[in-house]
Image 1: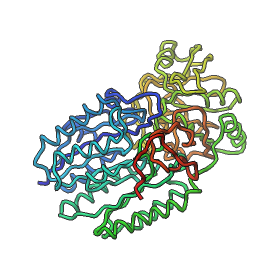
Image 2: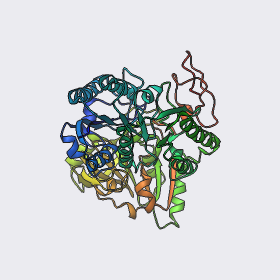
Image 3: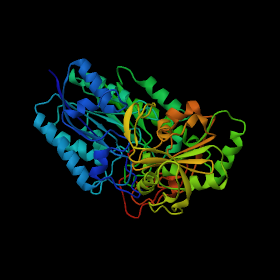
Image 4: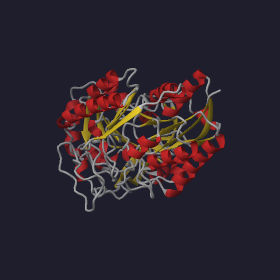
Length: 507
């Protein structure tokens, strides 16, 4: 029987964010399933939208014996602590080593992990795995399309396969694709690699694959795959990780080097030709709320606003109050916003009880410039223990645990308060505290794009607002220090010039 070691360790690192990812953050998981070890991995990784779950499904169909190590993820944030990285990777590598001899290794990683002591988390994981298994054992990795991929990650693996949707509704499908490619490798095939890094950062708000130009790029990418090019990926990247390999990338695998190079270069030319199109309208908070209120007069579905700069899926602490202030100040009617992370406020609401009127200071505790706690008197409309199932296409049926939670109301504005962080990417994240999203005029979600998977069908209009937060919609305003020289800080933006020399971009 074919023996394959598997594991998962996912983190998207915003090096400018206020809060680091500790070991405990991975134990809880945030929007990811909580940390699991050994045989328990196979119990948890079933029927959910995660790369590892898709691989497990296909492996069992093929009759492969799986040796699980560890599986975990944490909400995007600042650096992964050295303690967390070394404990998790130590368990993963120890499990692989103990399982030898093996026929293959599959890992579900992110691609944009930066730690306290390592700029390239995935490159180091791949190096350690290859050191244990040797040069000949097939090693395949699934990645988030927001990965900032390094040459080392490409070098130490036999194949990297990235998601093709944002919102990421194809995470499990990507795991299935890894299993199909593993079949080819187990049959003795080996493929040439082509890797390209592109010379401009792409803000995440314009990476959505429901819209152009990204939609057409991925359609072309899929059309280029055939027997000579079994897999091809484009990562627009995560433009908030201050290290040399933060940039979009393309990687292709071909029967010959010519095949791989031609496919990669075709996608590079396509992306470069759309540089002007990776841009769009972003509203200031008051401007966006007033526009939404005007639209709501004639729409029969909610106007959904992305509070994009405080997206906990991009490193925000999910506690800024700029959009809440705009809703209240402009007297928005039938409006709701969430999720604001504030354990102290959630606890106070529970102590006061449903129906109580209580003075609270909510959010604004992460030290974001231009932000502050919002103090006012609220009605506690609904309390929750924070446990529910998120059945929308992004979370894909995951069990969620937001901790003590509440719906607070001020005038006709409702606020979801929680004790754990996860981006509001599912309608259930309103319903679990008694808010029916389809009955609101305005919904303000702390998310950038993932919310669209579940909210586009109920939305009359989508808007993007930029209140203070850890993930600027304009990537050029971040205080970059360690990017590669010559990369443009946004589409058609100024060139980055480092204070000290860094490696040149891969041509």
